[in-house]
Length: 325
Ligand code: DGY
Image (cartoon, rainbow, N blue to C red; front, side, top):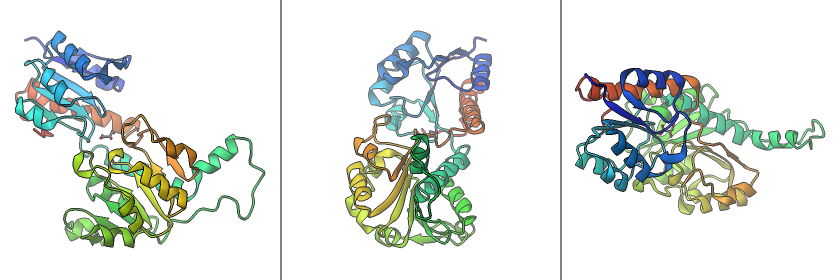
């Protein structure tokens, strides 16, 4: 029985590439050559190798044009990400292509990074690091780089899914009070005392730190705009590890510049890897390069999950556990 052809768009952890090569006629991109940035090139390669499956990643351009250009041999697109805003799900569904993602396995790492950004923003860690590296630090001083403590502060979690709930558990350890906003309240055993808000105004007006965990896409586009920023209490902190498209960058920069927002911590950007230039002029924003799930353990787990989905359909003829279409 010939092995199914699998097109892998990105370099993956070694154990994942080895498993793909063992079980498939795998066409790897171990060099991370940049053809994955071009949807037409992805489709051309899929055609060339008559791919049955495509293992792609967050940010790969799997929009409508790419899906339309894929050969009929493609039965499944397994993305190495929980987010699917880079894939035209409807177009895939219409062509009978199964799309899968990698939920759950990255919740802890992403919550950990949100906590990192909260702490860095509250304690001015980026500014401190830049001062030391610039050789400009003149020694300890009683009023130098004073931040704010998170202890006793109200954390507002926007999107109380797996990542948001994991962050809530971590923040309770810091003595924070947890508030959340979602489509509906979570069951009491899940909320564990977290306070539900049924309106943006009550949510944003109640919190000291906003941590955003919303999916990308049109429905959440520029959710954090000037109007909602104005609802935050003066001196609030904003953290985003969800998707950059949910923030109006010009409005956030204005709020950071005026001090209405004390500080921000961002891991994701609208149109990344491009970054809104206004952020570079500000000291009170921490900028990380989309590191949410970037731990050895998590990336291995994401790779295993993506291959489990491919195996289900292509090796066993079953519905993949994380099928979205
Ligand atoms: C995802 O999985 O969607 C992340 O943004 C990449 O880790």
